[in-house]
Length: 161
Length: 108
Image (cartoon, rainbow over all chains, first blue to last red; front, side, top):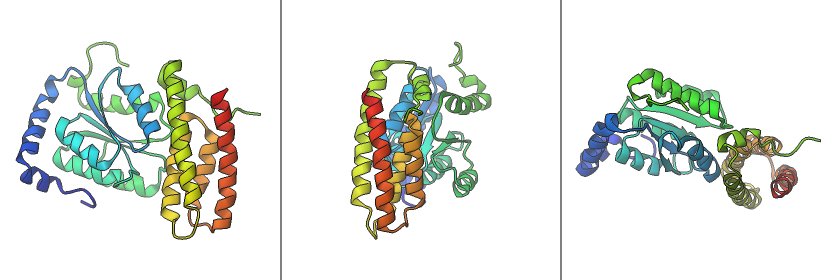
C-alpha cells in the first residue's frame, strides 16, 4: 500500500474493527437496499452523486481516502465509487485496499482525466468500472446495472431507477 | 452567443428541484472562489503541484455543473501546470473572465 495502512495490519491490530467489518459483511444480504460508498473530495461533485443515488440506495459519503477506508470497514458497502485524485491519497490505493479485503465489492473509479495510466492502473487493480466526469444519470446507473447483472439477487423488487 | 452554463445535465440529476439547484449553485460558487484564490496564490515557481491539483478540482466541478468553457480553461491550466508565472497570469485572467460569466449566469 502506498499511503494507507495495509488491510492486514489494520484487521490484525484492531480486532474490534475486524469484527465490525465481518458483521457488516454478513448483514449485506439482509439489507433492503444496496449500500454505496462515494469517495470524492469535491463537495459539489460529492453532493451531486448523493442526490442522484439517495432515492434508491443507502449512500455513505467520504471526502478523503482515509475517511473512505474507515466507512468501508464500518459499513461493508456493496459498491464503491472512488474518485482517483483525492487530497490525501490516490483512489487507486483505496481501490487496492478494498479489493484486497473483499474482492466481491463492486469498485468503480471516477475521474476527470481519463489518462492511459489511470485506466491501466484501474485494470491492474481489477476494478469493475470506470466513469469519466462529467457525471450524468445514465453513466452512473449503467455502472450500477452492471453490478446487478453480477448480483441479480440484490436487485430491488420494485421498478428499476 | 451560447450560455456560459448548460444546466440540462444538472437538471436531469436534480430532477428539476429548484431549491436543491440553488443550494448546489451556492456550493459551486463557494468552492470555485476557493479554487480561484488557491490558483492566484500558487502561480509562482515551486507551486506547480498545488496549481495543478486546484485546476483539476475546478475542472471537475465546472464540467459537472455544465460550465464547459470554464472547465476547458481549467483543463488547460491543469495541463500547463509547469508553465512560467507570466503564462499562468494569462491563464488566470481567462479563467477569471469565464468564471465572472458563470457567476452572472447563476445569479440571473
